[in-house]
Amino acid sequence: MASLAPDVVETRIFSPAELQNYDGVCDRRIYVAFHGVVYDVSARRDLYCKEEGGGYAALAGRDATRSLAKMSLKPEDVGRCDVEDLMASELAELHQKAIQDWEKRFQDLYAVVGTFDPRGVAATAYVPAALALDLVAQAAGLPPPLRAPGTPELICRKPRIYRICGFLSPQECKLLRRMATGPKAMVFHEAKIRDGLRVEDQRWTQVEKDLLVGVETRLGWLMGTPPHKDEVELVGTLTPASVTAAERCHLGLHVDTNGGRAWRFATAICYLSSVQQGGRTCFPLARTVEEEDGGPPEDEELELLEASQRLLDVDIDHTDRVLVNEQRTERRADAEALVAAGSACRGVSIPAEEGSVALFWTRRCDGSIDPHSWHGGEAVAGGGSKWTLQKFKEVPLEARASPGALGAFVERTRRNIMK
Image 1 (cartoon, rainbow, N blue to C red):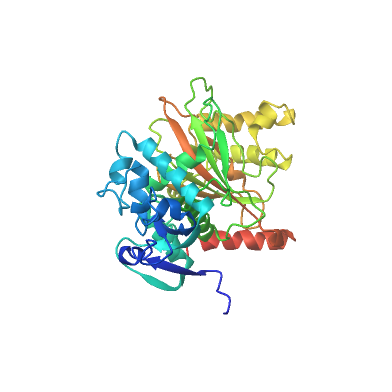
Image 2 (cartoon, rainbow, N blue to C red; image 1 turned 90 degrees about the vertical axis):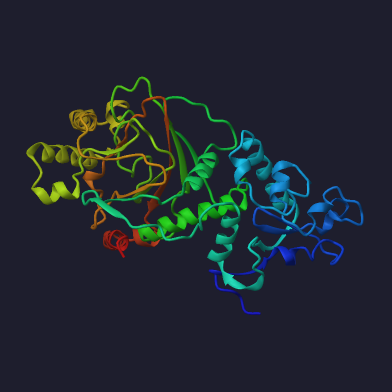
């Protein structure tokens, strides 16, 4: 048989009627559906076979999602995949944990033989990989992970900033917040708490993995290059409320080549929660499209831009390197000017609105770092917290060969977003 294209997979889609044939009696094989995926549990006839008195025999050839979420084998729960009422109940956390534990158990112990469509559609075919992802997401109550990313709204040209509302659904934001918490409980303090969300991480369920793949792919569509080995994974970030921040941008201002990631060219910030007070992403040197069309910048704005460029000229990419670490102290006045502009609410600020995404380019069309792209996170006030999912897009290795190759790559990505 010829090998399949990378975007096509062989999959079997089971209907409820077809799945019932695999109960260990009509057919020696025993299949069980859970969270949209069908598993072959034949190796445990002692648990799932009616003839052998298995404790979970009621689930053979059936959908077990609701039953195992509730730990109930009552007839009214067997064969159902709806769990919305359970997730809205006082025991939601327990039900969610049961689903996660059972899904991991199935994935670790049993082979996947297909997906489950509770609507009654059965098929054995070669289908687009995206369709297989969609069926699993649908069973989990999530929208298709590879849907269209939405229409970008141009906020400003220098730096190039776009915003899309509704990029993520409320259910996706909730799931990503939980995933970003990590395997251990977070310690809340007045700093950002980060956790990398690698697609290959073994702790993810299939639904969680598909969601990460969907986010990575859709951001790649928007930003002109798919995820690749030369960039880091998605980063989940929690910013707790600050009670002592002296400055509006309490963690300083920076460009996204900081931290030793010199080849970053653009960034996506997905907001996983709404913040009522503070929490904006501030660009003190940016001007909205309307402001740019209305006239040239004022002298004070030009002076601030020159200060930002002087910092970049001496390889300073974060104000804390000057103001806290006391590097290149001759540029202290420039760093203080940037921080003061942020505290004075100058420039453009993107609100933290659940489900929205902000996309901005750190590099200009010639590949150089845009001095307008200095930015910082506004302190969160009012006792809330801000959850984000960030993707730092980096220049692929082949585009790093020369300044010309770098410029051509960045220019293409900047044009791509409006196609």
